Image (cartoon, rainbow, N blue to C red; front, side, top):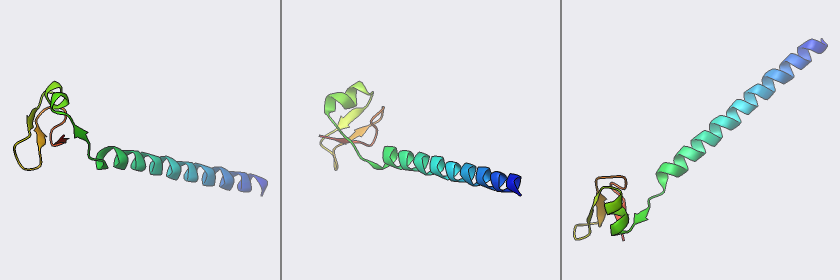
Length: 71
């Protein structure tokens, strides 16, 4: 009986720890992708892109900052 209680406690702890790690990974991924950034024209160029300042939205085209807003 005592071994069964210990086994249940170990399984429950492992399950809760797994859920905690999964939640943390999901929160990190959502934060990294969900926040739009604003870059300067020189940062856009340094990242290998071309700042399209005169077009709608003022976005960086290509490179590391592709699709980011240029300010």
